[in-house]
Length: 193
Image 1: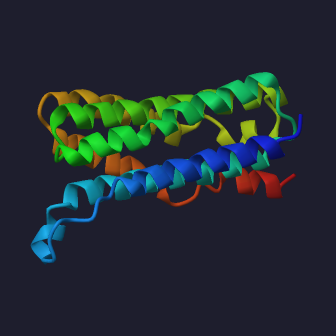
Image 2: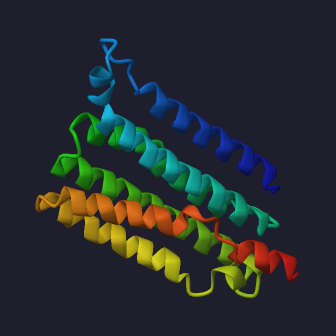
Protein backbone atom coordinates (compact mmCIF):
# COMPACT_ATOMS: atom_id res chain seq x y z
CA UNK A 1 0.00 0.00 0.00
CA UNK A 2 1.15 3.54 -0.74
CA UNK A 3 1.91 5.90 2.16
CA UNK A 4 0.30 8.97 0.54
CA UNK A 5 -3.16 8.22 1.90
CA UNK A 6 -1.78 7.62 5.39
CA UNK A 7 0.06 10.97 5.31
CA UNK A 8 -2.97 12.89 4.03
CA UNK A 9 -5.33 11.38 6.60
CA UNK A 10 -2.89 11.99 9.45
CA UNK A 11 -2.30 15.60 8.38
CA UNK A 12 -6.06 16.15 8.24
CA UNK A 13 -6.62 14.76 11.72
CA UNK A 14 -3.83 16.87 13.19
CA UNK A 15 -5.23 19.99 11.49
CA UNK A 16 -8.62 19.26 13.04
CA UNK A 17 -7.03 18.74 16.47
CA UNK A 18 -5.40 22.17 16.29
CA UNK A 19 -8.65 23.74 15.08
CA UNK A 20 -10.59 22.24 17.97
CA UNK A 21 -8.01 23.56 20.43
CA UNK A 22 -8.14 27.12 19.09
CA UNK A 23 -11.94 27.09 19.24
CA UNK A 24 -11.61 26.57 23.00
CA UNK A 25 -10.05 30.05 23.29
CA UNK A 26 -13.13 32.07 24.19
CA UNK A 27 -13.30 35.82 23.75
CA UNK A 28 -13.30 37.51 27.17
CA UNK A 29 -16.31 39.44 28.40
CA UNK A 30 -14.94 42.92 28.81
CA UNK A 31 -12.64 45.30 27.04
CA UNK A 32 -9.79 45.65 29.53
CA UNK A 33 -6.39 44.00 29.62
CA UNK A 34 -7.37 42.51 32.97
CA UNK A 35 -10.27 40.70 31.27
CA UNK A 36 -7.86 39.22 28.76
CA UNK A 37 -5.28 38.39 31.44
CA UNK A 38 -7.79 36.11 33.19
CA UNK A 39 -7.49 33.76 30.21
CA UNK A 40 -3.74 33.15 30.69
CA UNK A 41 -4.10 29.52 31.88
CA UNK A 42 -6.19 28.60 28.84
CA UNK A 43 -3.78 30.38 26.51
CA UNK A 44 -0.67 28.82 28.08
CA UNK A 45 -2.19 25.33 27.87
CA UNK A 46 -3.09 26.02 24.23
CA UNK A 47 0.47 27.14 23.39
CA UNK A 48 1.93 24.04 25.05
CA UNK A 49 -0.46 21.70 23.25
CA UNK A 50 -0.05 23.48 19.91
CA UNK A 51 3.70 22.97 20.34
CA UNK A 52 3.23 19.27 21.09
CA UNK A 53 0.92 18.72 18.11
CA UNK A 54 3.43 20.54 15.93
CA UNK A 55 6.21 18.32 17.22
CA UNK A 56 4.20 15.18 16.45
CA UNK A 57 3.28 16.47 12.99
CA UNK A 58 6.90 17.33 12.22
CA UNK A 59 8.33 14.02 13.44
CA UNK A 60 5.52 11.98 11.87
CA UNK A 61 6.29 13.71 8.58
CA UNK A 62 10.00 12.90 8.87
CA UNK A 63 9.30 9.32 9.90
CA UNK A 64 7.04 8.74 6.90
CA UNK A 65 9.81 9.93 4.58
CA UNK A 66 11.67 6.77 5.57
CA UNK A 67 8.65 4.57 4.73
CA UNK A 68 8.52 2.73 1.42
CA UNK A 69 5.43 0.61 2.08
CA UNK A 70 2.58 0.62 4.54
CA UNK A 71 1.18 -2.56 6.02
CA UNK A 72 -2.22 -3.05 7.63
CA UNK A 73 -0.49 -3.10 11.02
CA UNK A 74 1.14 0.27 10.32
CA UNK A 75 -2.29 1.71 9.50
CA UNK A 76 -3.70 0.47 12.82
CA UNK A 77 -0.72 1.72 14.83
CA UNK A 78 -1.07 5.09 13.11
CA UNK A 79 -4.76 5.22 14.05
CA UNK A 80 -3.76 4.36 17.61
CA UNK A 81 -1.47 7.40 17.63
CA UNK A 82 -4.16 9.63 16.13
CA UNK A 83 -6.65 8.46 18.77
CA UNK A 84 -4.45 9.67 21.63
CA UNK A 85 -3.60 12.90 19.80
CA UNK A 86 -7.32 13.54 19.26
CA UNK A 87 -7.79 13.62 23.05
CA UNK A 88 -5.26 16.44 23.48
CA UNK A 89 -7.90 19.21 23.01
CA UNK A 90 -9.96 17.73 25.85
CA UNK A 91 -7.09 17.38 28.31
CA UNK A 92 -5.73 20.78 27.26
CA UNK A 93 -9.08 22.43 27.87
CA UNK A 94 -9.59 20.78 31.24
CA UNK A 95 -6.10 21.73 32.39
CA UNK A 96 -6.41 25.36 31.25
CA UNK A 97 -9.93 25.89 32.58
CA UNK A 98 -8.87 24.61 35.99
CA UNK A 99 -5.69 26.70 36.21
CA UNK A 100 -3.32 23.75 36.11
CA UNK A 101 -4.87 21.91 39.06
CA UNK A 102 -3.30 18.59 40.04
CA UNK A 103 -5.73 16.10 38.51
CA UNK A 104 -6.08 17.87 35.13
CA UNK A 105 -2.29 18.21 34.84
CA UNK A 106 -1.89 14.52 35.69
CA UNK A 107 -4.46 13.55 33.04
CA UNK A 108 -2.77 15.84 30.50
CA UNK A 109 0.59 14.20 31.27
CA UNK A 110 -1.02 10.75 30.99
CA UNK A 111 -2.45 11.75 27.61
CA UNK A 112 1.00 12.87 26.44
CA UNK A 113 2.46 9.61 27.75
CA UNK A 114 -0.03 7.63 25.69
CA UNK A 115 0.74 9.76 22.60
CA UNK A 116 4.46 9.09 23.06
CA UNK A 117 3.89 5.39 23.64
CA UNK A 118 1.67 5.19 20.54
CA UNK A 119 4.31 7.01 18.46
CA UNK A 120 6.98 4.61 19.74
CA UNK A 121 4.80 1.61 18.85
CA UNK A 122 4.13 3.02 15.36
CA UNK A 123 7.85 3.58 14.86
CA UNK A 124 8.60 0.02 15.99
CA UNK A 125 5.96 -1.38 13.61
CA UNK A 126 7.40 0.57 10.68
CA UNK A 127 10.84 -0.80 11.54
CA UNK A 128 9.39 -4.34 11.70
CA UNK A 129 7.78 -3.79 8.30
CA UNK A 130 11.00 -2.52 6.70
CA UNK A 131 13.63 -4.52 8.58
CA UNK A 132 16.35 -3.70 11.08
CA UNK A 133 18.72 -2.41 8.41
CA UNK A 134 16.22 0.10 6.97
CA UNK A 135 16.67 3.87 7.07
CA UNK A 136 14.32 4.39 10.02
CA UNK A 137 15.96 1.69 12.14
CA UNK A 138 19.39 3.22 11.51
CA UNK A 139 18.11 6.72 12.22
CA UNK A 140 16.35 5.86 15.46
CA UNK A 141 19.16 3.78 16.90
CA UNK A 142 18.59 3.28 20.61
CA UNK A 143 16.19 6.28 20.68
CA UNK A 144 17.55 7.93 23.82
CA UNK A 145 15.43 11.02 23.21
CA UNK A 146 12.27 8.92 23.02
CA UNK A 147 13.12 6.98 26.20
CA UNK A 148 13.91 10.17 28.13
CA UNK A 149 10.58 11.62 27.01
CA UNK A 150 8.62 8.55 28.11
CA UNK A 151 10.35 8.63 31.51
CA UNK A 152 9.57 12.33 31.87
CA UNK A 153 5.87 11.75 31.22
CA UNK A 154 5.80 8.87 33.70
CA UNK A 155 7.46 11.05 36.38
CA UNK A 156 5.19 14.04 35.75
CA UNK A 157 1.96 12.12 36.48
CA UNK A 158 2.65 11.35 40.17
CA UNK A 159 4.31 14.76 40.60
CA UNK A 160 1.05 16.40 39.53
CA UNK A 161 -1.08 14.12 41.69
CA UNK A 162 1.10 14.83 44.73
CA UNK A 163 0.44 18.54 44.33
CA UNK A 164 3.57 19.49 42.43
CA UNK A 165 1.71 20.52 39.29
CA UNK A 166 4.13 23.30 38.42
CA UNK A 167 7.08 20.91 38.59
CA UNK A 168 5.16 18.43 36.45
CA UNK A 169 4.40 21.26 34.03
CA UNK A 170 8.08 22.19 33.94
CA UNK A 171 8.93 18.58 33.06
CA UNK A 172 6.38 18.64 30.23
CA UNK A 173 7.79 21.94 28.93
CA UNK A 174 11.33 20.52 29.11
CA UNK A 175 10.26 17.51 27.04
CA UNK A 176 8.68 19.81 24.45
CA UNK A 177 11.89 21.87 24.32
CA UNK A 178 13.87 18.65 23.83
CA UNK A 179 11.85 17.94 20.68
CA UNK A 180 11.25 21.52 19.50
CA UNK A 181 14.30 21.48 17.30
CA UNK A 182 13.38 19.05 14.51
CA UNK A 183 15.00 15.64 14.83
CA UNK A 184 17.57 15.41 12.04
CA UNK A 185 18.37 11.70 12.50
CA UNK A 186 16.00 10.59 9.73
CA UNK A 187 17.02 13.37 7.31
CA UNK A 188 20.70 12.54 7.85
CA UNK A 189 20.11 8.85 7.22
CA UNK A 190 18.01 9.52 4.11
CA UNK A 191 20.78 11.65 2.64
CA UNK A 192 23.28 8.81 3.22
CA UNK A 193 21.17 6.34 1.20
